[in-house]
Length: 531
Image 1 (cartoon, one colour):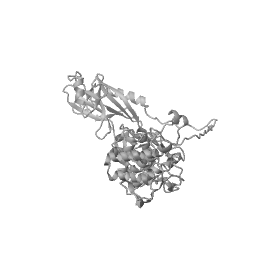
Image 2 (cartoon, helix red, strand yellow):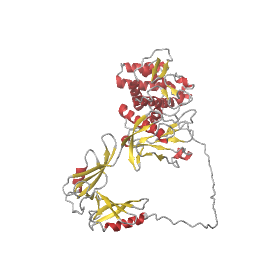
Image 3 (spheres, one colour):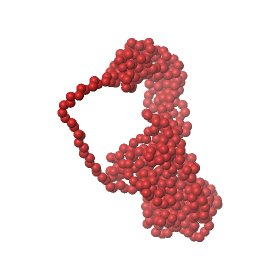
Image 4 (tube, one colour):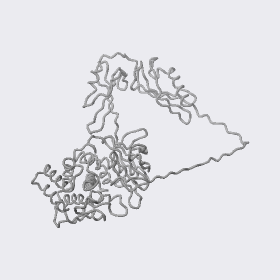
């Protein structure tokens, strides 16, 4: 699926006037209700109250308090959150919330500190010793350790705060702060600041699926810290300007999706999060597919996730990869619905894999191979997902299309009315989405063989161009062969004849020169007239 240039622009100018009424009124104005203290007044009252309640706050004259947050209730009660320091050192676990009535009366305080934190502030352990104690599990120090007073565990004590970064065992980024006793060198409290959560969402096409999200103010966001921070955003039906497309600036800002309970979408278009669930799930599944099947750590093999945007434009019947992110339109409801199905997600992200490896030029025969690569791996991602609501098959976009069974068919590409089943010398002159049919047909025959069968509940029936009968070697082997060919043997200008050689080389590498797998690859290419 290619990126369509959106050249149409419209400007709407709206003006409005306010209706104003003038003249005197004889009605007596009702007295205004006292709203209670302003936030600033609440802070001033709380600070004044601290000096009168040092014992309750486990404080001495050395304790200093800095305001972090203020809440004023409708009834005028106030709640002022303050962080504590002593001698310029933060007291971790020393924060308090001062509660006062509307009239300023003391209503109490919330705190966990059980005794004064005014302790010795002369360290006996060196910075180097503390750092060495804190850095375990391959973590690396970030910045210089600082002195604090640790009051979150046991009696308050002087400690070093060491900040470190790295990667967690499952590949999640790591940002850890660790306190080390500045008198004894004992490790005290270690805190991971990368928060992930496993939520679930009701998608449009894949049913209710698990998704990895991140905690945030107000609940959760669609940010997958488990897979390199890939995030799914709402394009808010805006489109990229020409300046944005060409030069990358002036682009519309996509909005974050947030959810309070980590249960996303309702499975319908009435909830904008439903399409986002599909895209987020698709990105995660594609990431996992490449990592677990091909050992590739992310699209660019750098462990980083990539952004996805949903709800792009109005009635936009397409999806695209622009080198950095995936973008999905909502469809027009006539030709197609939202283009966020699992095979489309796998297709778009696979364009990134191609650009990072063989970088097949997007025209001529190499362009057909580029598109076919995305169709092949999009299909493989669908099989990998093993989702009963959208089982693996060789139809491309069968979930999103409304005016036909699918966008493309790998078993018989010509069923779409444009693609070709067999190679000919002029195939490179076709649109890359149609010349891709030759490689798609090859991949199907190599995987499943010729003849009629039902796959994923859908009818498939592939004939050969040379009248032969082909026996498939299975889609998993074909995927491994194609991936090795793509990453090891194909280059920017690879032709169909060269793709045959590349995949035969890959099959030899993986399974041997005399293997049934190599013979199956050769037979499938011959069956689509690539000899």
